[in-house]
Amino acid sequence: MSAKVRLKKLEQLLLDGPRRNENVLSVEGLLDLLVGLYTECSRDSPLRRDRLVSDFLEWGEEEEEVWGRVRGPDWEFCRIVAWFGL
Image (cartoon, rainbow, N blue to C red; front, top):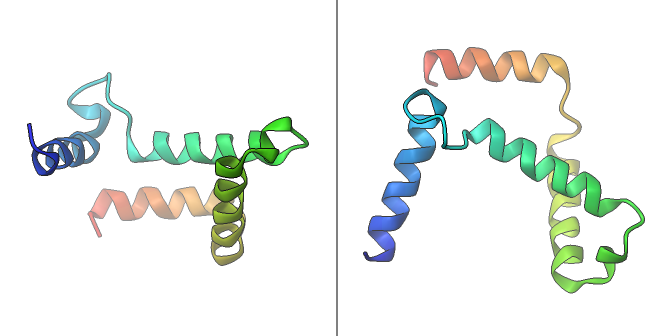
């Protein structure tokens, strides 16, 4: 299977989400995973010395500066946008 076919399949799984298949992660689940990983790695951890982890943390800091901290009303806004498909 070519990379384009696999990418298209993965994209469709994410777009369908858990509504069609309970074993598939949703976009929200993946975002929660990234936030959790960033939080755990950003604490005083020996993992911070790893180059890939430090690159990930730098990327996360840049994104955090742009978007700020996620708050409860942000999730409500996301639900409304997702409901209407904007």
